[in-house]
Length: 77
Image (cartoon, rainbow, N blue to C red; front, side, top):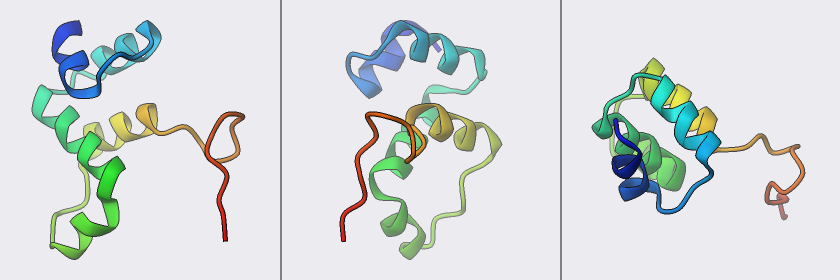
């Protein structure tokens, strides 16, 4: 995957994130799938989509910071 392909899916992102994504060996389609999971994981499960494969799961891990990390959105009740 090229830098421009990654940006075409994610928009402007940090160069370190682009490098991490490129190192996974994932395809552009896998990046699109990971991005869809981040935005609507519950909806995809409800629609019967299979759970993400290992490369897609790695991409999700790269793109979605842990909840306890500073700067991560706080959970609200």
